[in-house]
Amino acid sequence: MSASATLQAVLRDKVGSRDARKLRSEGRLPCSLQADKDHEHVNFHIDLSEFLTTRRAHAHLYDLEMGSQTQAAVVRELQYDSLGSGIIHVEFKPVTRGVATEAEVELSFVGNVVDGVLTHNVTHITVECLPSQIPDNIEVKVEGLTAGTHIKASDLVLPEGIKLAIEPDTEIAVVSVPRAETPEPTEGEEGEEGEDTL
Image (tube, rainbow, N blue to C red):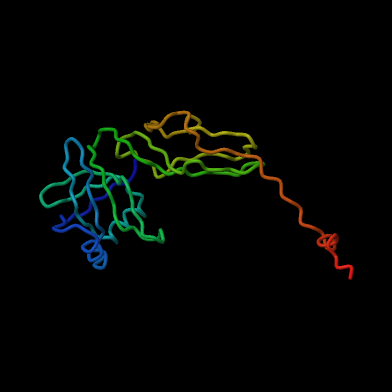
C-alpha cells in the first residue's frame, strides 16, 4: 500500500495571481479540489513544507481537513514555476476510500539497451486502482533490448491490483537504430581543393 497523509486545508477567501503570490511568500501552497458529480470545485491552501514532506514519504492518498469536514483526495496535477524547480499549485482529485480511481503514474526505465537509442514516447501512464494502492512508479525493463524493439503499454508488468487505463497498444518507447555519424575530416584534407595557388 502507498503511504497516506493528512493535510490541514484552509479555504481561500480570494483567488488570483496576486493572492497566490502572497500565499507563497508566506510558505503556503495554493491548491484546488477538482469538481465532479458529487463535489464542488474548492480553492484552498496548505503548508508547503508539510506537503513536500509527504511527497518525500511517497504519500499518494491524502485526507484534506477543511474545518469540520475531511475529504479523501489524490494529486491530479502539479504545476511548477518557470524553472521547473518549485511547485506553485496543486490540483487534487476527490476519491472514496475502497473505490477504484484513475491516477497518473511515472514510468521508471530500468537497464540499458544492447544497441540502438532508447526513445521514451511517454513518461507517465494512467492506471486504475484503489487510492491506497497507487504506486510510486512502474518499471519498464529495457535491459538487453535491441534496435527495432517497440514497447507497448500491454508489455508492462503491473503490480497486483493495478490495471491499465489507456489503450494497450499505446507505444511507450522504441529502440531505434543510431544515426550514422559523419567522420571528421583528417588533418590536411580540409581545404585542399581550395588552396591558394597564387
